[in-house]
Amino acid sequence: MRKNRYGAWRATGVVTALVTAAAIASVAPAQAQSTAQLSAWVSDGWGGGTITSQPAGINCHQSAWDPYATSDPQPNPTGTCTASFQVGTTVSFTATPDPGSYINDGPTPNPVTVRTGYNFTWVMFCPTDGLCSAG
Image (cartoon, rainbow, N blue to C red; front, top):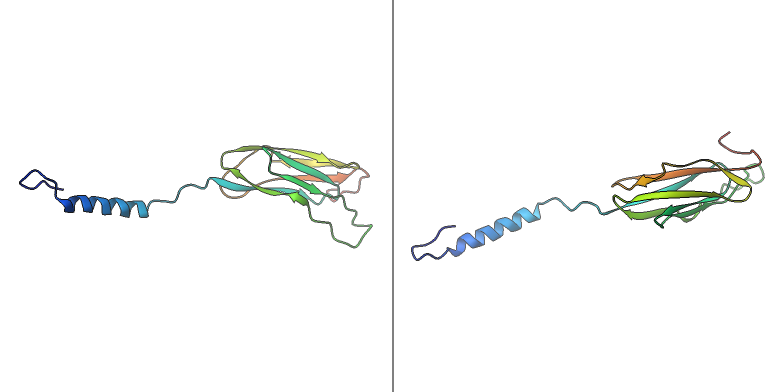
């Protein structure tokens, strides 16, 4: 921008500056993702139980299942098994077996610091009678 001979700024310089700023803003990178999905996976150990998160959001239950007693497939987990959390949040998990089941492994990892992309934890419940897909 230049001043004209009367000391005033030329209007074209101001317009050029505004257009340039708008062009730069239009190609600026998008803001970082502020939330991400976190999933609790209950493996098929054939036992039953619930995994919950702190802060609240995940409350996922898997019913016990005996593959030798029925030809029906194992039922899908019920409740909220995937939830959104703020990126950077540390989420802790508690696994609680149903009566007649125990925690064979997990929750792993515990806790989880939520990052952009895929976030998960898992747990395996087995029946106390020894019949468990994990051996």
